Image (cartoon, rainbow, N blue to C red; front, side, top):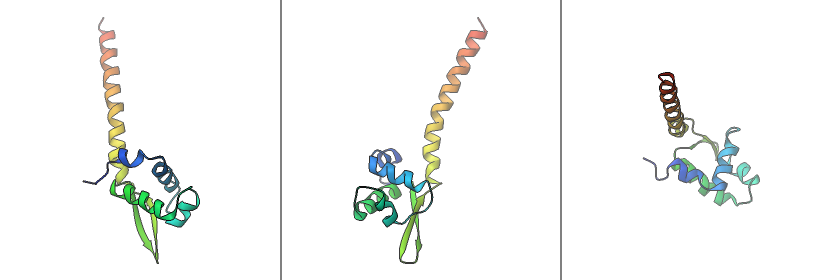
Length: 102
């Protein structure tokens, strides 16, 4: 289990922006920091939190690390959100069945 859950990790606006930037594909810390009003060490800290939450992964490319969205980490987030749809659809079905029986 990770230190941070995905909601804690994405609760910070800067981390959400980092995560959104990575939607476009792998990026090194330098390229992420160029697009944010924070330092490279701060970006590295945000990436560490996102990584511990299972939302971001990295691979080495020579001397640098390329960070990217961890597609496996999104599974938990997606399942949580889908649970709301499942509940809503179940209530809709119950209401439709009750209306149809009256």
